[in-house]
Image (spheres, helix red, strand yellow):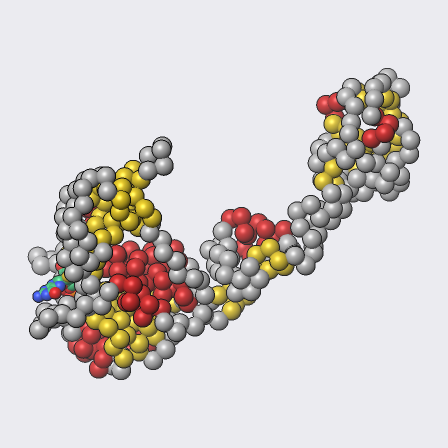
Length: 404
Ligand SMILES: Nc1nc2c(c(=O)[nH]1)N[C@H]1C(S)=C(S)[C@@H](COP(=O)(O)OP(=O)(O)OC[C@H]3O[C@@H](n4cnc5c(N)ncnc54)[C@H](O)[C@@H]3O)O[C@H]1N2
Ligand code: MOO
């Protein structure tokens, strides 16, 4: 029977359809790195809160120092955090430091480097000043009530500092999507084990868990389940009971006699949405819903697993975080000729050189076997070739997806 293979874009649309963002939770700012704002953040204060000196020097009346010579009487000091209480009168000055409020009467800062202290204690300007010189006006950065961080913003280093400057000690963010990860296969043992004769190490869970964490989710490793229907059913029930938003199964997705992940999931109540897509690597991808939990069945071949994680698990997590799903492919140039493609959208592991003239050269790596993590780790991008794309010569334009 001919396979009915779902196109990749349709599969992404079905995986992310009707996903409700996770609830809002309030977290301390110090724990909010990489979290996604659930509500906009407005300034709770004005910055700077008053006219402030941008330099260490002397607060002066610009008219007094418009031309040289100019000598001023020192009447006080204003370090940061302390205002000078009085008013600067004609030919008077106040010692001032960066970040201190500009005293009444003053309208410019004479740089320390442009001033000399005379024997009688007076201050002699060696350079003339302009009005407002080295003064940061109140509200230069932002004003109270202004929204500077919109909902849906991911909090990176710059956004966290800005949130702190706005005077938010804690922030409303989307709860981290919880992703349960379950590896299947009699041949699998954890890395670092003493390997038996027919065993390999389970590698996929690590890459998938890393992707979950990078995206701002929480990975819950449910371990390795042997090819046993009862044990698999029990593990699926544990995943359901854990309240995970997503269950990712690894392996057992194909057609062999030991590939019964789909059957057992359906038996446990999963509503199967699709199985098998027009993609290489990753044909036997499966998706369904089990109660409130989305289930992604990733193929066991390591590269297939991780590429499917990037193409389907990543947008699913983005949807749960209320983030838009965007086309992240870019235009590049083929560094070598490629053959005509068949019915499966191809994701070719490739090197990538960003040229100084702005071109990006993507060259397929020699071995494309979906079991080869060595090639995948070496690749910098995937060349995306649509179904039935024609053969292309070196130098032809192509689309690429950069790898994280
Ligand atoms: N007759 C057919 N055979 C296969 C087809 C097909 O259409 N007809 N599809 C092939 C494709 S494409 C893929 S991809 C694989 C997917 O198979 P499964 O999802 O059932 O995965 P397994 O058979 O369990 O394992 C495949 C391979 O990957 C290794 N593996 C599995 N889990 C892990 C893990 N967590 N970490 C590291 N390596 C893992 C496993 O040992 C196998 O070598 O099916 C093809 N067959
Ligand atoms: O398409 Mo499978 O995903 O080659 O290995």
